Length: 365
Image (cartoon, one colour):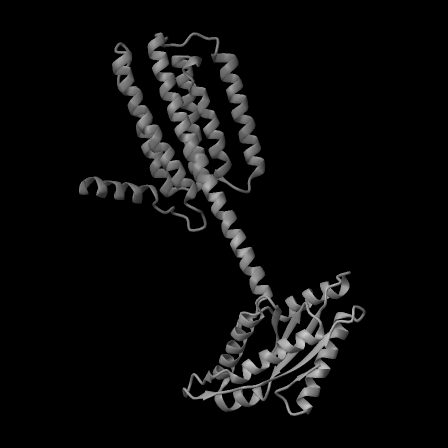
C-alpha cells in the first residue's frame, strides 16, 4: 500500500512538474501530459485487443506511437507551449490519417480531431488568427478524410466484432480526453472568475473604506448624501459631524500609535452603535460623519447618547498601559429637502465649531 501511495505521489509530481520558461503557465502542459498518458493507455489496450480479436494482425504495431507519446511528454518540460502543441498536433494528425487509411472510416479515429480542436484553443490565449487558421485546417483535413478515405477500402479490413471493439475503445478514450480537458479548463475559468470577483469586491471595499478604522471613507459618504439630496426621497435625513476634542494633544503627548488606537476604538463604538440606525464614516483626520434617516430631534438624541458613550469609554495607551478618556463635539443638521449636499454639510460643520466655542463635549442642533 505504501509503495502504491509513493508511486502515485511521484506520478503526480511528474505530471505537475513546472515548465522551463518562467513566463509561461504550466496549466496547459499539465493538461497535455494527462492527455498523452490517456493515449499511452489507449495504445496499450489497442495492442491487447489485437491479440484477442485480431490474432492475424501485426503485433507491436503501436510501439512507435507509445515512444512518440513518451517523447511528447518530455517536450512539455523543454519547449514553449506553442511548440509543444505543434509537435503533439502533428503526430496526432499523422496517426489519425494512418488509422483511418489502414482500418477504415467506421472505426472512428477521425473523431480525435475534436479534442485536438478543443486543446488548440487553450494552447494560446491571445492568438485569434492562429486559432481560426488551425480550425479551418482541421475542418479541411476532416473533409479530406471523408471525401478521399471514407469510400476507399481499408488496407486491413476488420471483422465486425474487431471493428466494434475498436470503436468502443476509441469512444471511451475520446470521451475521457474531452471530459478531462473541459473539466480542467472549466474549473480554471471558474477559479479565475471567482478570483476576479473577489479582487473586484476587495478593490471596491478598499476604495470605499478607511484603512485605519474600517469605516466608510469620505468619498462613500459624499456619494450617499449626493444621492439622497438630489433625488425625490421623502424620507427624513439628518447628518452629524463630530470631532475628537484635543486630539492633537493626544498625538503630541502620547504618540501617534496611541492616536490611532483612539480612532480605532471610537470607530468600533460607532460601528456597533450605528447598526440599524444609520451610516457612519471617517470624514477626515479626527472627524466623523454620521447620517440618519430620522428627523433632527431623533438624530440629536442618538448623537448625544453616542457622545456620552465616547466620554465613558476607557482607552488604554498601548505604550504605557495608562487608561484615559476622550470626548467629542458634534454638530447636527436636518435636511430641509431644498438645500444642496454641500450646504447641508456646511451647516452641520458650522454647528460643530459652535460647539467647540462653547467648551466642547457637547451636541449642537
